[in-house]
Image: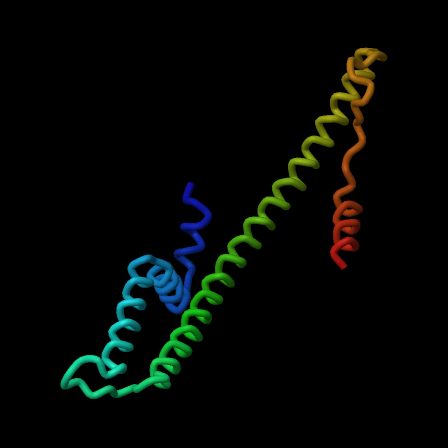
Length: 151
């Protein structure tokens, strides 16, 4: 059986794959170090301390500020795309878990009814645990209660 995430990854669009690649690349120490070196080199080149090099973006580094702002915008968008994808995966997992839980509850309720019938058939009147309940959980009522709490 293939892992759930692998199945979803096969269905990713090329844009989502690219966004995940960028997120994985940008979220590294290598990327941080590359940015710091680039910014440091930019500043050193533009403060006029290197003889013979004319600053192309003198202090207060307006071009650098714009480049950093554009980079921040791009990084933010890429991260948001990846987060949206992860949220879709989490939502799908939650829905699967919910459906499995509902089916398990139905099966447990059916087993409890069978046990109750067996107990009556065998004329067993004393239960070892008096707190044992054969009543099933009303999934619809529980769902309605949770939905009311959310609103």
